[in-house]
Image (cartoon, rainbow, N blue to C red; front, side, top):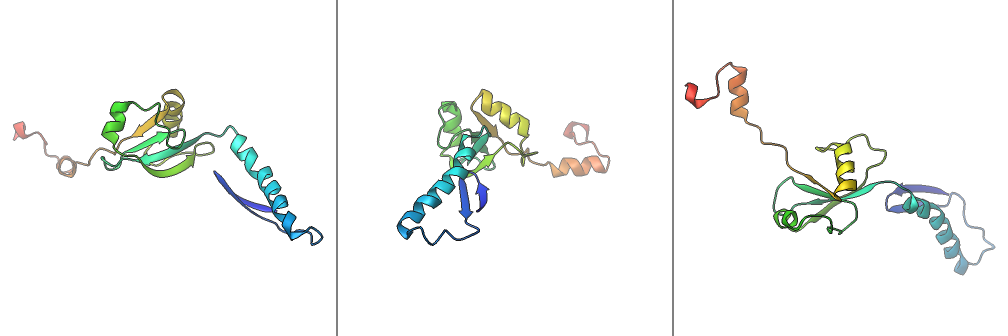
Length: 144
């Protein structure tokens, strides 16, 4: 049997056919036993997972929580400003080295201590300021 595992699902297929002496009506039992042997250890493992939601009110703002649709530890004021959460993805945190736009250790710590992590968008780039500093001009309007 070979398995492709991606939490919370496992897709398994048998590398050899089920014995022909087993009646077809009983073959589903064998397959379900095999699947349980693969998926139950995955569920019972101590791996850390998070569920990431996209804000409906604020662009590039994401809320990480430990369990799907469980916002009980998220402050009410934050949820009002966040808007209706839209499921973005489920993500295992163990075995990862980094996340996009968030520090992995900060996310893990916030999830275990607060029960949530809020990822805000990166600050907007001030291209004019960058250009003026590259050509050696002062950006302060008072100095002009």
